[in-house]
Length: 386
Image (cartoon, rainbow, N blue to C red; front, side):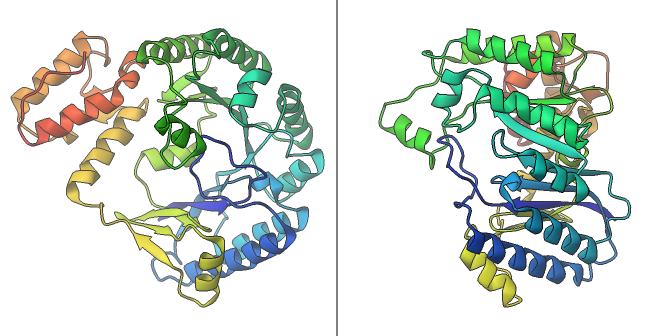
């Protein structure tokens, strides 16, 4: 059975105020500790009787900032993973990088290690927006990062952008970002609306009443305008936050959204295998100690019950351009038919199919749609989010 392999590289020069992923500052000692433990974890996984016959279809190095790894670490990790797993049918190898922290020699090392796809965290091309987001790089760094990626041989590059910033950073900046990314012509674009996660610096500021995000109408206007511009430029809107040139959709992420098995290595990495979820402990040292002792410290996701599994089925199916088969819905058939009919009537889903495929407007109210479908599972008749 093919599966996807994710490697969490936890190093970040600075913690962005909106990010709640596990991370630590880089350093030679930490890097050496990480590499040795990661290869030990890969070795343990390769001996697993369930995993051993499986073939890796996609490989993704995320973080954190994988582009902070030294050339030696890149070579050692890539070689160790190739020795531990069957990569003979690998279809995609993505590495995340930060502009300004991915110099030409690093990109060349990643290409030599087999990376085929680069994801650049640009977030914005406006200095004031980058400053608010706590980013260290400049707009010029992002442009140079893409040029250097091309020079290194990457013909599949994704650029990330963030919208829904506070009112003092008006939508004109967002429109300029979208226009610039279209002009740069990457193969893939991801757009993310800023959210205030409780454990982040932004979350703490919001709790103190020091930071508020725009009204939902602004979020909707920015999202729909970006979608129309990207689609008009030839990008396929194939998932709620993702746009790609035809044939350049992220294979790794599509496997996530299809609910297929993936294995996560590294501190804080998550895994899903045959319906069972777990997460590695989010501590570099605790993870390394446990892995090197042969007993990785993990947290099993006890929320993997039938109800949460159904919710995930709804979310993953509705996020994708492929849609969700109506036959997978649960609840009173008459109520479900009425609900899906109303979704199509309100232009939140496309008409004329046994699939529920959300429109751009539908993606904006994805959470509400899933909540109402969950209600209908228990035969509670509710009105759709229209």
